[in-house]
Amino acid sequence: DGGITQSPKYLFRKEGQNVTLSCEQNLNHDAMYWYRQDPGQGLRLIYYSQIVNDFQKGDIAEGYSVSREKKESFPLTVTSAQKNPTAFYLCASSPGQGSSDTQYFGPGTRLTVL
Amino acid sequence: GQQLNQSPQSMFIQEGEDVSMNCTSSSIFNTWLWYKQDPGEGPVLLIALYKAGELTSNGRLTAQFGITRKDSFLNISASIPSDVGIYFCAGHLGSWGKLQFGAGTQVVVTP
Image (cartoon, one colour):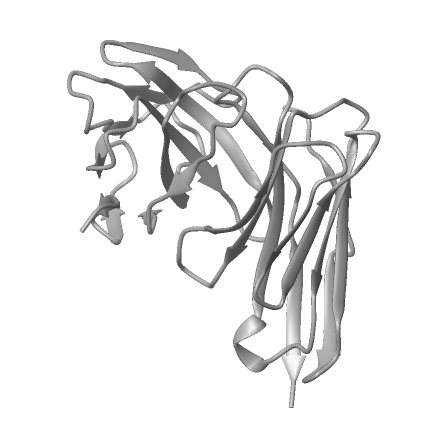
């Protein structure tokens, strides 16, 4: 059945280590997004990709990197340069067809840096 | 980035009561979206609005796209315990893709 999957659900890493979060969609959507959510706050955009092999920085891209080599996959790497990486990370996708574009979210990955 | 102004921040209501929340922006939006998020899960789309003045229902939920295109509201009628969660508004400023999000309304339903 169609949807967006993120793995793993929970991730623990030591400070100073890079970590990659997975996001896969089988909705045939062109656009994909990564958001960060901190407790009691809304969603902040990290990176987004409108098409394969292309991506743009969002509002809080520092300390993160992405790739978009396949339409269905948009992995996010949290690097050691990210000063406060512990957060809930959400991946989303959308058809990417104009102003009626609607985003659908995955179940999220909770990253804890020890 | 710019955040939408969403209110109230939280609501404590009794089962069976109606709930109303709204979002406002200083900018004109082309699309308004309402999501619900349960603890530890991703947001789930409830209602999408694409035209100014549009009024759309989804079961006990009703949402409207404001005439000025700068606001939207969400109503939940006859609340039940499973309505507990955080409700977010979001909108497109015009260029598709990038969404602006409200800070969320926490809804708590007591029996």
